[in-house]
Image 1 (cartoon, helix red, strand yellow):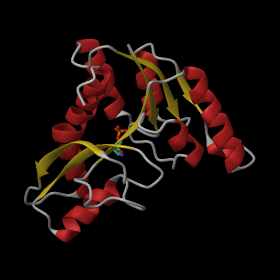
Image 2: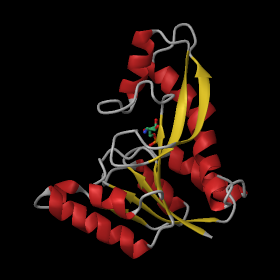
Image 3: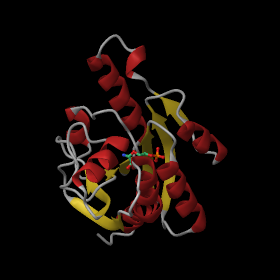
Length: 197
Ligand code: GRF
């Protein structure tokens, strides 16, 4: 069984896709051991609770400084002994100690076709606003390994999604989630758990 810890900050629809995949058996040989949020109000924590998965909040705001937060965060992860850490809409930049300690064992979902619309400042709706502003006809999502950079690690899976006339950032975000993110993130976990990468 692949022990997975999912890190979240918000609504958790990607987390839900993983939970559903594990329950349906489309993500094989995988156990979600815990969900960690930096945001106490994240609806993702409720999704975890409903699925019977232990959820924790570790917020940088409750620590004296970043160093103390990083230390507590890493200690919590070490305690959980994950084989794989999944960033599913996690908005905190990971400390270097973490990307080094878990090198090759952290993956992220990004809502564009990397290397377009990625890197510092490209998160959430901003990604889709930039895609629409540039007038691209195709966008999509990417699952990649996480290294010390922002969206720079090796690419695992990508899926393209068409931009439609009249799209708003919100409409495009939803389509990218439905057609790409919720498909390729569960698939990447299944591939890793079953040594198919
Ligand atoms: C997704 O668009 C993901 O690609 C991005 O943040 C969003 C998270 O959504 N990194 P959710 O919390 O999984 O609903």
